[in-house]
Length: 161
Image 1: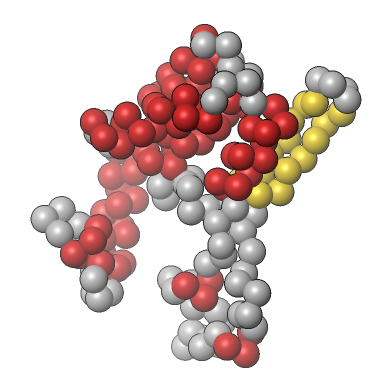
Image 2: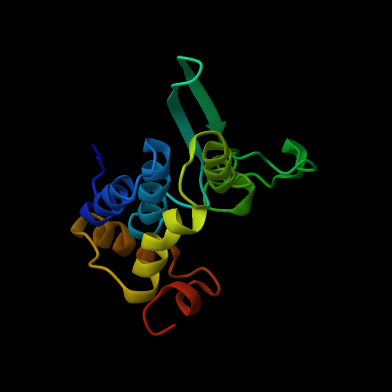
């Protein structure tokens, strides 16, 4: 069984299972597609947390694929927001992404198919396009309003840029 909010991501996971992939292989394929299709909730630039049943040891295994703050970053180096907190929409609130490393860690332990095959559906959708869901379209519209005045945002992320 493959479950996700995005039907094309589900289809990618099902394809991997039909090719003899493991549940972890399918999950990686789905997550890669979701990073493209639902970037406001998932993504290569984010975190990944996994619980996997290890059939060899018969134990539940957890993997923390959360990102980390840069080693040299300290609280004193972060210019505060007007309310004194860490500014939410700046690089100071971001971590070094952990998702891709977690994919490879999970794949090394539990994968069956080559990583290139797992990422192929996401690559195909990135190259050929896909329908944007209403929820993501709404999220993008909100983001466009929020970040429109940021230098370079329109040039990189908006249509016509």
